[in-house]
Amino acid sequence: MSEMYCKGCGALIQNKDNTLPGYVSDELLNSKNPAEIICQRCFRIRHYSEVFPYTVSNSDYLQVIEKIKSEDALIVKIVDIFDFSGSFVPAIKELTGNEDVILVGNKMDLLPKNVKPSRILSWLQVMLNSQGFTVLDSVLLSAKYGDNFDELMEKIYQYKGKRNVYIVGSSNVGKSKIVNQILRRYLGAASDIITESLSPQTTIGMIGFQLTDGTYIYDTPGVINKHQYMHYLTRPSYKMTVPTREIKPMIYQLNEGQTLFFGGLARLDVISGETGDVISVVTYFANTLNIHRTKTLKADKLYVEKLYSLLSPPFNKEEDVPKWIYHEFRIRDNQKYDIVFSGLGFVTLRAPFCVRAYAPFVVGVYTRLAII
Ligand SMILES: Nc1nc2c(ncn2[C@@H]2O[C@H](COP(=O)(O)OP(=O)(O)O)[C@@H](O)[C@H]2O)c(=O)[nH]1
Ligand SMILES: [Mg+2]
Image (tube, rainbow, N blue to C red; front, side):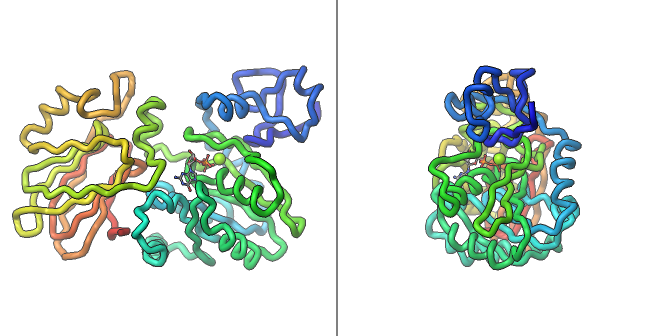
């Protein structure tokens, strides 16, 4: 069989092992136009929403992006606006060897509608500066609703010259959805070509498409981010933690000695507030995640007794959520800050404050200047 690649996930087409990506039966191989074939795994993800955990090892991934290193390319780096630090992958420039990067903040539709895009763009710039990272330009997108794609394409053509374009970023930031939108809107595709899914590691290899000037645009597999909750939860639990529509912020007036639980996945204790009394905490999490307020004194006991019920997800012991640790944040100026539970959500509060944020030790918990 000559080498063919699945157009849904980029895996090498094979007829040997139906548990691996790229499997196509001999029957199908002989009966269909090779350009039309998607592998069994892509077919099942698309039609039955089945999950196929598969790990692209780091060495596989490096091999894939080795191709980018060997050429002068335009990199379009995607971040999830809702989880900037968790999805940023500072090493992208070293990994790809390319200096020319357009930054895309995706999933704009999740932020409350009253947030101005100009504010998010200048916030992105502050975040980039703090990482010592420079880019040619930045664009905000919603791949879900197709917002701002004209601007993205204008910028791509403005900067690319004769170079190929690579869409890169960590898993689940929406790379495949973005390329599908580009294919539909500008390259005449009648339907989505690449397989997208809620699970990480859906895209296995590079998937290239010819642009109108004869160069190529490539979707790539994601850089793995082990700090995300999704690796520890079952699919029903994970689904409840992933925001799929505009987030409705909730405001809690908390006193010292009060605690918020975010399902059974994270917790925030107010040690001291602004003037020693009430502190406003605004929460930004999936609307489906249950937030529970209690006294800090009772919090440990409640966690032991009500994990998997009142404090859920997780829903059962099989979900192997690693042990919690806490991070203490004591800030004395009077600016607004976010405390981010990477991949889950964030809270906003005005300093000065002292809080403790609890999460499984593998999950990144950090503070940043407030995005909103
Ligand atoms: N709300 C929202 N969800 C998105 C957006 N783009 C992608 N997603 C969802 O994020 C998940 C991952 O998307 P996918 O394109 O497979 O990400 P990839 O791993 O970077 O290729 C899927 O469940 C998508 O539906 C967006 O703009 N808004
Ligand atoms: Mg993908």
